[in-house]
Length: 176
Length: 114
Image (tube, rainbow over all chains, first blue to last red; front, side):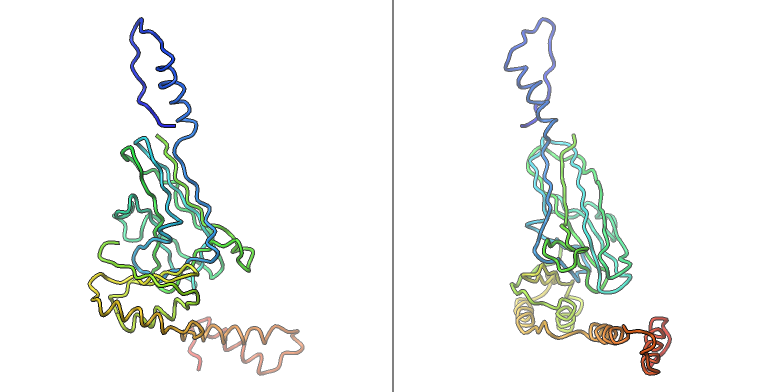
């Protein structure tokens, strides 16, 4: 249900069913169920990277797509990571509409986390408000990089180790 | 990202760290890194690479032996084997076992050991 900018009512204006349905019912429905996508990714295997520049984790399956009414979108991600050595760092960022990254002013990304052990470690990015988007379709894609070695993101319902048997979760939801 | 291309190859078995070393030896700073998802590998190269270099990247991926280990992985494998051998009651520890543990601990502390 899409949002319609509420009309300005005039004194003595006739209330019509069409206007009430459009400006009250439909807008309340739109507020109740805003454009939203929650991805709980089971990749059947872990993701891994050695990339020292930001790249998509999975440009097909860890990319949320919303058709928004224009305004702000809240994006957040969480997942369980490990590295091949203690002290590796994973940088995380979000790419909107296939261009650049939200944290472009920061070489480390929106978040840069030191992985303290080779055992899986939960990392949370966001919630992050992405402002000023026009009405229409928008994509929100998870990016990552390592500062060296190999960084791994678990996303496997069949992982041999229960503690690593977790999804990678990416959520986007229009909030204004 | 800008200035980078991705070459995508389908192959399940990849030792990402080893393949990274193999590609880095060929491409140096033109290699940005690799990403894997269990079914394939993406090679991230600077877009200044030539078509011949991209072909060479494919050949290196095709010739990659995922059963081999990097030097670091081999060292970690050997360290794990030493620790496994020490998982037994203290009464069964020999002087050689104790030396092996001391050697590992010295390495962890950053002391020079041969």
